[in-house]
Length: 342
Ligand code: TLP
Image (cartoon, rainbow, N blue to C red):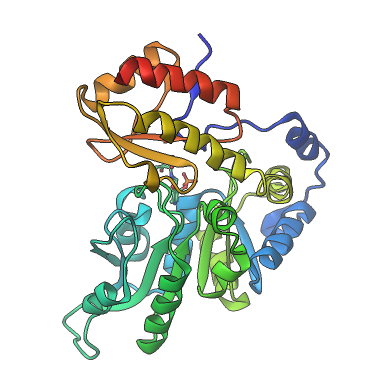
């Protein structure tokens, strides 16, 4: 059976065009800084994000964790939203790799307000407490169903960060989706942050890799940490070429994935046995709660009919649209969802 795989936008495979540029990529030893394709990706990404420098890293987790490491010292604390990827899905690595802890704040649809964050900031001079050092936000927010973090709140949080001399980090794994959904350039989003981590391997269709960007000084530190953590990748230009292709060709088309998500949302909204608000679908992620079936049963029934979907938070299901699922396949997915959840 050929499956329609909507578990994540990470499941995409490089297209023939992408493979062609990978095949043709000029490479060198990137640990010496001599891989022309990696250097070009980093130059292009820094320009796109309006930052002094950028670094190609192996994954979104590595990107976030290197950023948090260069912004902190052991004993520091990072304020984030309670459903943040850095808090839930990065294997406890802030503690393991950087000796820092997270202060998760309960936001609404992934959004933490300056009021909530200010309450979480530790008082200056309280030597017996962790030191608040970073505010971190996620845009779009994965567990909140691809919700876009509002730019006005970002601006207010930046003011708060400045007031308390805190760093500001964005997990922008899917910043491209936020930008396409709002029309706000990624450069503008990035301008409020000291560091930003953005994925090439989800939504944009590259097989591997993320980009982190920031000041020249921070990225120089990040280069050292990437090496220390075993992320010096030698002739990684083969991968960087795919990433560069993805940045140049696959951002604009994300509106199609958002359209596909709206089609699925329309279907789910019409079904009696799911709890779901279609207005929550802003980009390519859909989260809903099955009511008649439990999550495992529902996932299994969909799989038996050829549709792969995944668990969101423990009582919910997550569906993600992406460039490898065509509109025709989305129509088939609609039929399957109707059969399973009617
Ligand atoms: N998210 C994955 C899973 O880990 C949940 C997915 O399928 O969505 N930040 C955000 C917001 C992410 O959604 C992810 C991946 C990452 C960081 C980490 O990226 P990778 O998997 O490349 O390390």
